[in-house]
Image 1 (cartoon, rainbow, N blue to C red):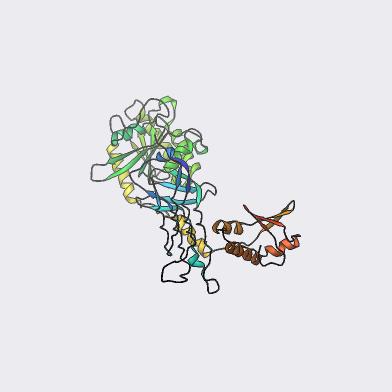
Image 2: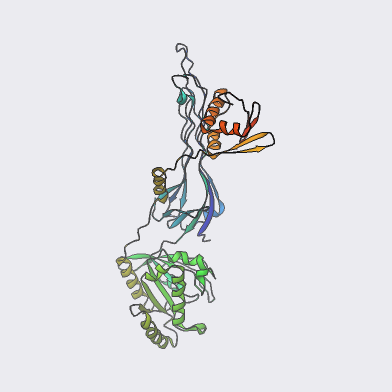
Length: 436
């Protein structure tokens, strides 16, 4: 089964917790703090593997979680950093953030990689908090939470040549003739419902990758028929071979077919019409094909006199080799497109350069006789703090006072004994004290 779009959840590893410990050795009196830092959580990294061709693996596994950093140890030993989680993806995959729609990376070459979720930093042990005034701190931090997000993966087939055209015009037959690919072939519409790839050996030492892309119908740019499921793959091809049924079977007009397909390409992405295009006038072994080809040339020359029209027959292989030579010549003339790599790293550099001022805002809501403090900064800070010691609580009180929370509580009517809630914690306000 061919899968070319997937939505997954990624969660980087949390940082390891720092610890409170003290040095205790026989001949080392007052050894001081010796709590080590926690290790960093593992990143989630997407890496291109040229051996993959679809996103099938993500149909069965949709959650990817990095390992947590190791907790700090005594004797000031740093906890081990967690190994990164490497997720393999096929070349041609676009990685997008589901919430914002932002393109994180466009990965096209083997070995390219991008970090889609950063592991959390390890918490600091009490060694980090030692000062001249406080030589034996009992404060440590929890590890930072790893980044989490929903990711949309969209695969655009990496092919040099793409075969486009209405259903049943002979695209799959042509691919089966020129390569070892074995696409499903039948005398009914939409025999091909997933793209097929084949490596074409031209015979003069050159080769290229050809994609048989599912048939288009009118309105495909709006999602009708196979719609966008097909059109996204055309964007990667460097040369377009437009296969037209020149026998006029099913009462269709070859020129009208050519016009409608080009309209769909233009409505989906106008850039597609700037790609080199060859019209493969197929089924020339059928009766009346020569007459229809002559009329087709006259009509096309009025709007696109520069367009190459090459008569072929996939069944008898008439003109097929000439078509391959011409397609290869065009490929050699077109430089490979430059794709931005590791878009996330560029974004990260901007974040560091354009870092906004720290948000110290908070809101206080009264609920019965209690006050509830809400603040993103305070909530994030409390997740890091290990509030299991009196010293840590005192530090929290000093931080809140410096942010102006004390003064605001007094204005709202807080007095001795008033209950103050911060997340899952509850404190008593003490008037005239330097802390809660």
